[in-house]
Length: 165
Image 1 (tube, rainbow, N blue to C red):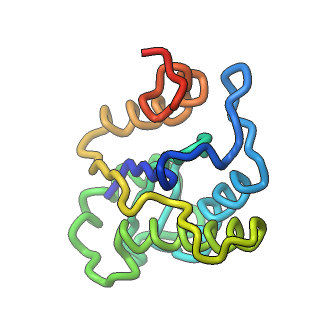
Image 2: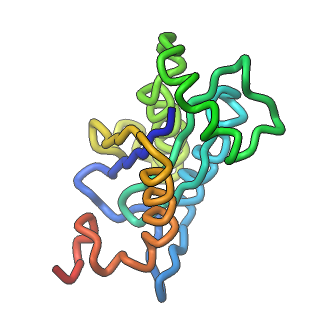
Image 3: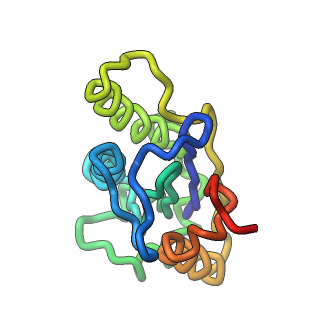
């Protein structure tokens, strides 16, 4: 199955960099988040991160849960859409849930961020996250487009504390 996830920082503080001329420029903390997201597929071979973006106070990711029996290192984005329904209900292990994936990303980035800023117990993330299950090719296309265009739309984003509404 495919999931569109959004994870915001604690109190929506802008910790990860800034958007300049429609492009996200990560700072060190943003790079930690990016690296944690990129490592997800290595740590969890049943997970494919299709696309993602780190923003100043949140990140979006399109995460595909794959059946380990059908996944291989040569699996492509086109292959994923054909196996999506087959895999939707096969996962029950806590380590194979969206929640565990989000916890892993948050935990990895938090450890590095709090070490750097010498704040071992300081919250980095809001308590929960937003997820949307993708149900069609149309959903998949719209989410990819939204994620890739997010930095260009930052001035209008409801998560931007300085957005033009």
